[in-house]
Length: 424
Length: 133
Image 1 (tube, helix red, strand yellow):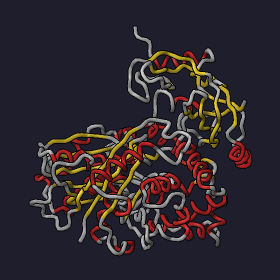
Image 2 (cartoon, one colour):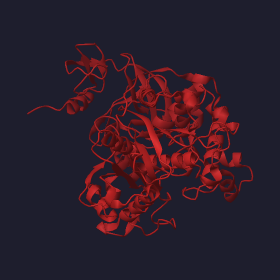
Image 3 (cartoon, chains in turn orange, green):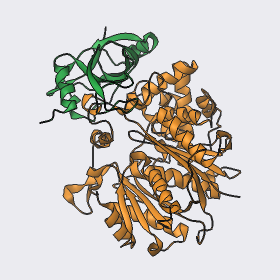
């Protein structure tokens, strides 16, 4: 019997900005981080039908300090939301931030300390304040963004000695997957092409995704009638052989927010229960001889399933952290949602699509929806809640999922699994 | 003044040695060294020199320009997943290997292959790298 919350806890409301670029994307262009965070938080509070003054605590997460200059989000974001004099904290669990915030909120509520907690995640990965300006921003080079992001990774030994995310979290895992299941490199390439096609399809159906162009449309724009030829062209280079650019994360700016509380007295018409969760952390290396299996994921899924009292067969919708498409597949197989060694085949057969029998990452995932570090886990929860409620518009899973599982890898590395349950 | 474990590790690399810790309680290796056993959590550990010999299990490459400016002059570089003879897994730069797809594919088909340390001094820091034996 796993550990349990001492009281039931619900997600009462969710909010999420479009993921994009604060310097370019129409819905975000010109906003400060305060305003971007407020956009998500106010959507979540409106969704929950909660007045700002009803919030007992504000947990705000942000990862890359150089792009935000906001180590004290608790007071500043609370100020911009009209939630003064309540409890608050700034916290960081990298790409698991918002969902770890939900678990902290749940524990505060189940223990009786709080009734309603607002969790916010905000991030810019593409720009930083321009010469300390309060509203002007300037773009940052990709390698600088990774340098700051890699502050989350082993600073004693790994980063100083040449650590790089792309071989460690893409290439080795892809090769390990092939070796483990007897796939050829060509089969791997075709499978990853199909995973990308699926995620880009979902992104094209989501007005909040950073990439709303299908892979086929991008190929056409680049002069290729055949998307496969585009896939294998120099326009889709290896970031770490055999992994290509279109199999990995698309960095973005964005914010997400969640109101967590009790069902009793909630005005929200469609609360979704946080049925269980599991968290596990580990520093590099994240695996031994088999790079398709991280012990932290085995632990986090075990804890979450036990707390929620579910088995893999109960899951109707799954999101796994897919900064790396192959790792997303590996984790989906580890979770039991997909059979071992079949994930890429399922992608080729269209079974991972919103209208397939094993739907995954219907918002588009880290590649198509985009990845705004501290805000991303909240965007996954946002999508899961919308799917459970039947509010996912064109990409709605039918019948509406009742049990959704969300997995995130917070750099580096905090494996976080939430089990959500709702619907009729 | 206390001497940092981290500094002792990097200083030892300068002398060609891979320093780790061995747990007095469970016998597990912790490499690189920290203040507690990676396996059982005991703080009762002793310094130990590792052989440095191991097997390269996977080989790929990193990005260029690299996130860490220390490696700007050698990026993009080959990077490998290695199991040392002591059963410890490490990831490190692999020297003397081209990163074109054909070469990497040939290693994918050949591994595991024996590797030995090829410690590099890069911009004032001793860095643990390996080369094919």
